[in-house]
Image 1 (cartoon, rainbow, N blue to C red):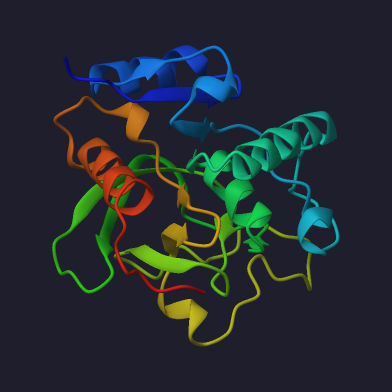
Image 2 (tube, one colour):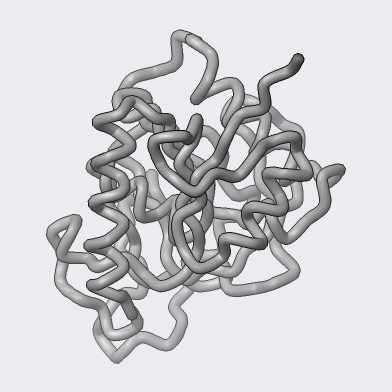
Length: 222
């Protein structure tokens, strides 16, 4: 008898995310203690005070949600359960692992998406793009970046304020996926749940979960 992995979905998109996991052979569970994976969902921005920055005019967060999900993240880590996040969930997990966010970027709030590629691979994968914030480099192992570097344009910020302050190196890429080995956590900005099981974006998500969260590979630790 094959034992299917169990996922504990955190957030307001339980049914949508749960259906995606079920279609990929998983089982949803009610209690975190039963889970093989804790999955954080999309939604509001993350409170910038959690990564030591002031509130940007375009940032909208829920302190209640941040506090609730911080407790769940800490519980999952203490129990040794792998952690994954999608969109806001990925950004939240990135912050919990010591990362920071750009609070407002241009060109990523488009439903039709864009192309991205895994680091060290030339193959392009079409991914969704509905966020206005983005993970910053400096914590974790970057796994995938956007194909284009034009997404950093301003989204109408107040005069004299940069939409996305970035170094020259950071301007060359928009980070889409980050892995934090020390926390066994995967941060995935696109929305694989927008697609069906045959779409490359959804297939990639579950491949990365298996490779990075459930296999003992010697990946870079940062």
